[in-house]
Image (cartoon, rainbow, N blue to C red; front, side, top):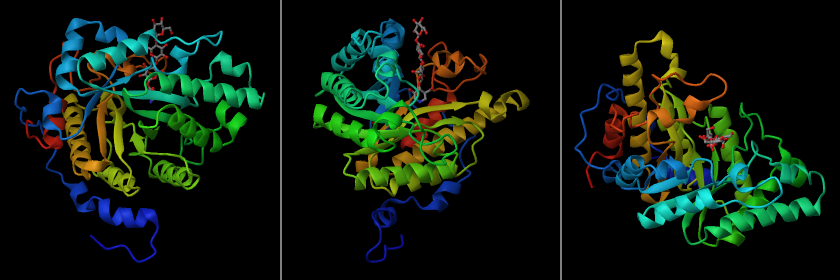
Length: 366
Ligand code: G3I
């Protein structure tokens, strides 16, 4: 590990301490069908929280609820803590869904992770109506964050305060309702300040996707985090969504985690799924795609497990069972029924990806 030169930047110093040896990224021993892990909960193989994206309806299903409580230690509301659910057309708030998820987490001793307060993709009518109105817009923005983050104070361990702020191709930051009204990075700084005001203890994260597959986007994301920290925003962690295609280049994920770790912040693998379909599924033998999926899952799990403990915030899968994946319900190019992006199949049985994750976590049943 090369020592950082005196006067090096924060990232250089922390990178010298935290960066994974890239040589570990190139290991090719992964990916064949992993040995079946012992019949233990997935979370038992990890020395850090293992999360699952859920909906109130899935938690109301006894079979799904039992699987979720057995295998996971953290819950992320897949959509019911977002503006699209909480903020009604007349400006009223709706909390029945997230409250049900919070109650399930509390009753089962699971962590609750809030997702997400501010997202370019959601600008509900109640905010669109005050677009351009200056102080009223800023006040409504702060009041929304105070109301939502404040409601789960003392229960949510953390929040995706800002989601997907970096441009799709990594060339700068997105324009959105929030940036137009409050400033390109100022809307983010405000959101972090407002969330901190609402909850003094929650870990406040910024979350984005394709950080593994697009080094340019990852670099822009990292610069944004450093800029927010320099501006005094209480950024306490970073989320890398990890929605991936099974054929991602071996080593890319490990290099990405090593890069992101150089910021020295806790990392949340926040939304893992590994699509076979997005890896040219129809043109490749399924056995090859599944081996590639297992390899990639193990590489990510190993890279995350290899982080310093203080940087291992949580490792979250974006759903319980394959047939519940968001990929299946996309309006454009939905995944076909044979796409198996998660660790459990439609019957709730473990898939080889479960074993690959367990092995990557450390394979020690806790
Ligand atoms: O369940 C209701 C149904 O009762 C109602 O009739 C219907 C009307 O449109 O809506 C249904 O809810 C949908 C919900 O998913 C449950 O399926 C919402 O419309 C739909 O917007 C929501 O989509 C979610 C999407 O984010 C937008 O919030 C997906 O489930 C969720 O997987 C996806 O997750 C995002 C992350 O937040 C950020 N990263 C990318 C990821 C995938 O897009």
